[in-house]
Length: 468
Image: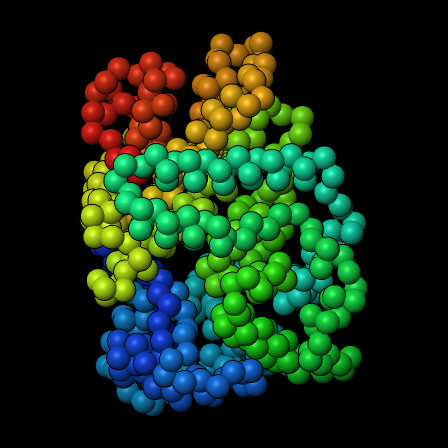
C-alpha cells in the first residue's frame, strides 16, 4: 500500500506549475518515447484491445497531465518490479470486485477503503450511477425525450452564442499587439470550434443510436463481461475520435468524458468542441423571462470562458513548437507570455480576506486566464447587444443600472459560504469562488468605470493585467 500512498500523495501535493509550463500536450509516439523514455510506450499502446488503427511513431496521442506523468515516471523508476506488479494486480482486482457477486471480496474492498481512508463510508452499488457513467448517451436520450428544451429558448440561446462568437472576432481585430499572422491563426481556431447545445437530432433518432452502438455486445447474464465490453467499446470510440478530421466530429463524440446533465460548459480538447450542459440552458443560468444583462453575465460568461481556453491552448501549442513551425509570430507570443506572467504574479500576491491565504497563480493560470478573457468578452458582447436591441428595464427595487446589474449577476453565481472558501481544495484546477470574482473584476476598466471606483482603490488597482 505504501507505493499507492506515494502515488496519491504525489497527486495531491502536485508541485505548482510555473506560468510558462503546459500541462496538456498532443505528441507523436516518437516524441512521447523521447520525453518519458523509461515507460514502454510501444508495448503499452499495442496492448490496447481492438484499436481500429495501427500504432506508428507518427501516431498522435494526447497527454492530459504532463507534470504528473513526469513525477510518476520518476517514482516508478525508483520502485521495485515486484511492488509495481503487486500494485497492478491489486488495482485490477479492486476495480473488478464491484462487478462480481462475492461477499468476501466485497468485505475485503470495504476493509481496504477503511484502512486507506478512516472516514470512508460504504455506499451500496447503484444501477443508476453505473448507467449514467457507462451509457451517458442513452441516459441523455431518455432525459431529452422526457424533458425537452423549449423551442424559443433554443432560438435565443443561439442568438447569444452568435453575439459571443462575433465579439471574439471583434476583440481580436481591435487588439493592436496581434499581427496578421497570429490573428489569422486565432480566427482559424475560433472558426473551427464546434459549439453544441441542447438535444441534437442524433440523440432523438433510434436508428442513429443503433448505428452509434454497433459493435457493442451486451448480454443478460454476465455483468462483468458487459462492463468489459463497454470499456473496450468506449476505448475504440475514443481512439477513433482522436484521429478523426475536425470537420467530422459530432455531438455523440463528446459523451465519453463529459457529464452533460450538470449546469456547466465543457471544452472538450479531444474534439475541439464546446458543449453546453443541458441544465445550463434553462433555469439557473438562462431564462427567456430574464433580461439579457443577467443571461449574458451568466451563460455568456461561461461560454466566453471556454472559448478563452481555446485561445490559450493556441498559444501553448505555439510555445511548444519550434520557432520555424510556430503559427504565432514572436512579438505576439512574447506579449501574451508577459500577460500570463502578469496574471500569475497578480493572483499569487492576492490574499483572501476570508482565509488570509494566498494561492499559487501559476497553478491556476489557465483557468485564471479564461476567467479574465471570459468576463471581458461577455461584457463587450452585452454592450453590442444593447446597441442592437436597446436597453432593457432594470429592477425597480434595486438602485442599480443595467451595467451594474450585469456585474452583480456575474458575481452572484459564485456566492459561497465562508466555510466553503476556507476549505477550498487546493488541488482543484479552479481557484476559489472569491478569486474568480474579485480578480477578473479589478482587472476590468469597465467595472471600475461602471461603479466609479477611485484609481488605486481595492477594486481599481493602478496595475491591471488586461489580456485584450
